[in-house]
Length: 279
Length: 109
Image 1: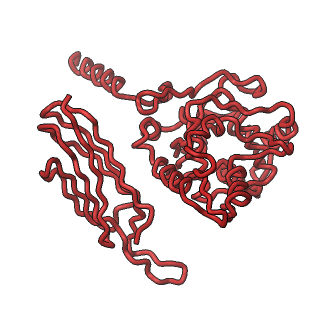
Image 2: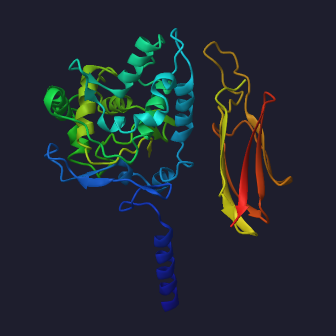
Image 3: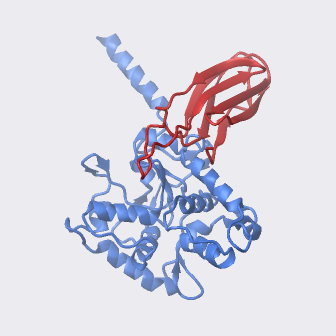
């Protein structure tokens, strides 16, 4: 009896030794880069004490996938993004690389997106890419969540990996941020739910088989196991709206852009994890 | 002709003689099974990687025959004994006759 108990204890401690992921685990990528997956909530997220990356809420197997770039399936897509980045497209005979040089010149950009441009308009990374394509390259714009677009935005996001999310919400961004906040707390759809009902009031709770996260966007575009591709922020917003039986806003529309800013600002302080792995 | 095919391999750079090392390989490939139909109802022809091999200094380590039921971006993880320093050569054979390969060197620690 005693021996059996001892064996169980030994087996348990062995398990604890090999378990590399879990609720309290630290996200270390490639054994060298430590990510901030938990932080004090920024002052403007007044209903939260702590903020948590979506990684914290995922199953151990999913967490492990993100801890090594070879195991992370998103890197197949960032490789495709690199090819697109280097490929000449459009009538001007330019590629992204011709103007921007090495893609690591984009380090830090994703951590600040979306931001207000010099014309006082809120701009997402996707729009920046498409503006370049239509205006400078003479190429056709990609659809908002097209596979090429998520591949390139994920590649650009990867350059900021490990940097803290730091979107500006004051000054010219303030009206957009207020709009986003209003959308976040507005109940919509047949189920009459707002973002906050799940991601603020009930995060860390199971909604049937799904473990609710805080809905942080620091890992987007994210590879989802359910559809085996990269998913954009707006694509994810759309999915959430369908789940609550609402009519989704348009991807790339003013509503989602404002919401993107507001949700990103709730994650100020978390590390950019792009490209992350989620279920 | 499959497009966007890119082999990726992860092999430790150094090992001790006689060590078993873990090797991970992945090739991005759409692995079209031949069972699907397009919008007009015509069958989409099969296009898969049908064979994968791994050799170490000319000696075969692994030889895999792959079938249409294997999903997109086939991934292999296996262990190999390393008796001496040398090169791992990985080869993928595509249905369309294309051969993709990757080479990784292992040094003795």
